[in-house]
Amino acid sequence: MSRRTRRSASLAAGIALAAAVISVPLAGQAQRAIAPPLVITAFGDKPAPRYVAPKTPWGEPDLQGVWSSDDNDGIPMSRPPQFGTRLYMNDQELAERAQRIQRGVQRAENEATSTFRGDFGRRAFPQTSLIVDPPDGRMPAYTAEGQKRPMPRGTYGNGPLDWTTDFSLYERCITRGILGSSLRVIYGNGQRIVQAPGIVALTYEMVHDTRVIYTDGRPHVGQAIRQYLGDSRAHWEGDELVVETTNLTDQTAIGVNGNGNRHSTQMKLTERFKRVADDIVQYQVTIDDPVTYVRPFTISYPLTPLDGGRLLPYDCHEGNFALKQALGGERAEDAALAADRARGINRPRRPVQDGLGVGGAPVSQTGPGGLTGPGRGAGPGGGAAPGAGAGRGGDNPGANDQER
Picture 1: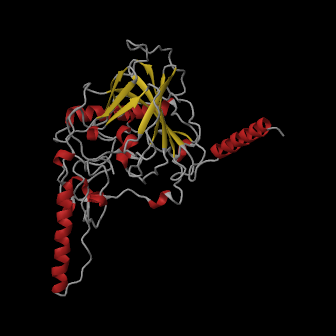
Picture 2: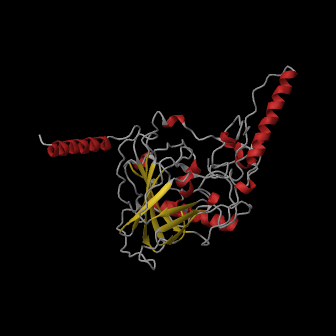
Picture 3: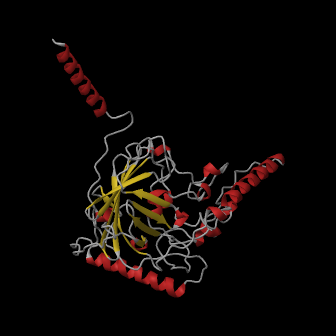
């Protein structure tokens, strides 16, 4: 064999070996699922009206505006069993939802007397669940590993509370994560989208997080860099903005207000935004985390214009005394236990909530809908009443007044 032939054979073998190495997933990295196409739920099983999205001066579809998930009132994350694999309500079921929402609007606008602000929806969408895949609309189970990482409960639980790490990132006014910042809660659901050439910025009203999403083709940052909201890169597929987010920490979760079991650093989110009417942006996100969930799943729902058209200030960390009060209360309980033991009294530790619900009211006086009050609106559907930092923990003006 000539020297040239041997050199060519060695080069070919090296290329084959490199290809084989590249094709083997790195340890702990399963092959990623392909995110499903966008499911436009805003019109139910009716055909979507023909619509041409407006364009920015530089020619991209214009998603800009102040949007909200308020109009998803009554749509649960997981589908109730009676609907089976049916993603949409029938006409009668939708009419009943619309009547309930309208009663809530009237009650909120005419009867609200509290200083607590709650937001409300004005229209009824026909979805039976926010989850559109798997077909049964149910949240996939946690893996054995995923079951090990519940979010700390803080003043939503019964303690003991020894340090700030015993509180969720939401109670600490740090972040609710991407999903927790978008899903509907009882107030603060505004989301402002701003575009410029090569960039999209998305600001969430509550905890005032802002995501900067590049559309100019730049690669993701290095894997050693981890961020609460990850590293987002996007591209356009026709009129649809497709955002892929990686480089997440393992400190956030994907439930309402960022609650639920925390995901892993391997989670990848694929989001889709498409303007399907002047007043509707369809939003969809696929959650792919093989370490935490037994399979990927997809959530889709419409965003509609925010009542009032502007985000309201949300000073949370700036006035978050709940952590200091709760930890101080716990240390006072430590001292009280020690004093009782010195007197020969052995009693169980007094829990943080100690029979109180959100707002410091006895549990028997707090209904499933919580308390309501004025603001941009007040009304039903969303969760806990204000001031969930009850019991020894005291009140938190920002972080503790949302759904658990």
